[in-house]
Image (cartoon, rainbow, N blue to C red; front, side):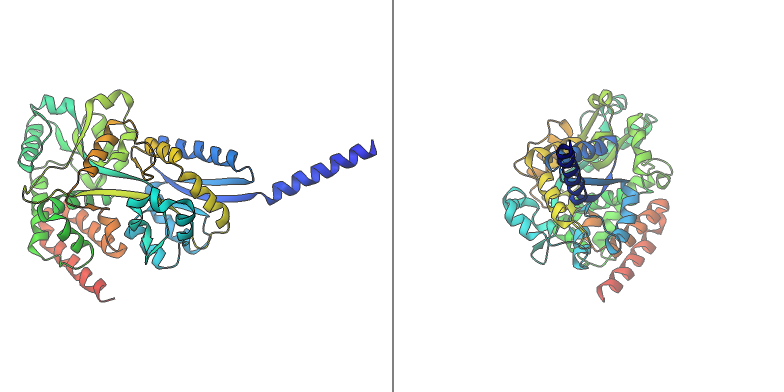
Length: 410
């Protein structure tokens, strides 16, 4: 009996020791909608099953709140993994030494091949600081039934056809366009696309790089085209009072006919409604220009102040697997970053893949992912002011030029 008791005691002590030594991994995840959270919960359970020595402590934060809180985490008690955006948004923190260099992981795990198309937006000064998770195209989601009710035949291909569709919708008593202007980045999508369509990718990226003054006539030309939509009341009334989450129901409930947004919103569409909702490419405004697109990518990062970097690297490697990344894209209504993953069998994702695959004019990340944070923040505040009162256009552009000039001197 004594011997058996001794063996049991030793076994119990070993079990306790093993539990104490098990790694705890803190992961902070931005999410939008129940489907995204459900994916992470399921995937984290799979990761823990495959890695029983690691216990994941996940924190789920709504996306807009997440954006505000992220800087504080990175400079203080940082989690081990964060979810973020590729491009300039990622580089902003990498440049300040707040993200871990994971170049060795790219080499070790073969990511240079499987994530080849997203290596550049994952890099800063030739080193990689991000694991791409997915990317998505942008376009106009629309209600087929409302188009039919207004007598619109087919999806608008040109700006003239688009304006005509808006006119017919308004005449039929239907709000043409929903937008959540309280979330200023939703307005930036409109500037991005109008500028890309009128002035082209090269000009747009020079503007994003701070090399073009906001008083340039081409910038004003883009805003004036946008102003036509505002002056004709084609946007929902009081657009600045809506967030994306409160504006999307206007489309779902048939109170508005269109919304310019990334394919990620498809996950929030009720299954019963999907046969009535289509998505089409932003219309051509200058047939002489090759069509350019926004193709925004998201990622996972390891903060430089993380306590458990070893297990964080294991977590990133797990998410990078083709089957996991494919499931992520399916849940998010996006496209997998891993080129070995299967593209979701979803009409919106397929349309987005087709649009980006056939883009000849260049692919930008997005307004606030292609320029410095300070300039992007001021630019989007200016857009809110402009949408609230289109007559302030000249003052808005003058202020943005003052801001650009000041930032360029730093």
